[in-house]
Image (tube, rainbow, N blue to C red):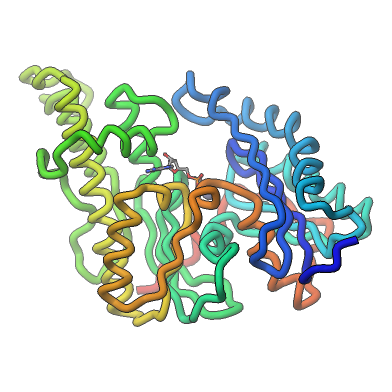
Length: 357
Ligand code: KG4
Ligand code: ZN
């Protein structure tokens, strides 16, 4: 019998290639968080293969849920609700988590709550931490999203900027592939960049219009491609001149210069958002928030503007279910729940709202 803080929520997350379950109490206190990754299954394809991912979720979901419940030392009867990341993501992957959550909730007679995965990433920095002062600016930097939000207590985040092409994590992954590094590319690029010079290449830094809060990473990605393969004579034609050989030193310089430009693109837009909205805190989430250089840059930005910065603990940067359970707590407290028609949806509700400038 659980006699601790309420609500006690089982979270389930299967939107991409991590099968995750977690038990969170009181909205922020994590009793267990289990993540079964599938990196090995996808590495040879250099990207997540949707069909392979959903099959692996099917095999993993029940053992992962059981393990989360065992580690949390609570029973299914103790739960107040079951929360599930139901959007955005790969539809076959999402369906596994949504079906498991609805099946469990139905059989236990408990409420089910659907959570937006992008919104949940913003919650990751609040886990195992003190309450945060609002209003806040939220930044999600992941493999699928690069978004800036304004946030008020108890309200859904409001989108004020997003990428117009690639997500920043996607750019890290593509640059890693160009440099022949392993998948997922973010950590590999970060490791290689430690040996390189960040000012070796003058790569372009996103969109230049000052008051536009949107990101663009495709120009940067193309500049890296040209540095690797040479500048083509015309689209899809070979380079006029062979590029310099891709030595270990050149690879490291490209990685370091790319990382510098990508981080500068993020911090520039974020700083403009801070100047425009004057928040009290800065919430950051998503896989790329594990990047050490980005964390340093965000810490500097937060000190400059006297903001309470919430960077997730490393284990909550990448996809996990604790952030899903945490993000559902407010709705459970208000006695809300979703109906059995709750469905898996490929797109985010918060990350596709009309842009506000
Ligand atoms: O949040 P996440 O686990 O999944 C999505 O919701 O997309 O983010 C995964 C992304 C991948 O693109 C991965 O390369 C990137 O986060 N990533 C990093 C680092 N660790 C993970 N990017 C840069 N530096 C890192 N250390
Ligand atoms: Zn994610």
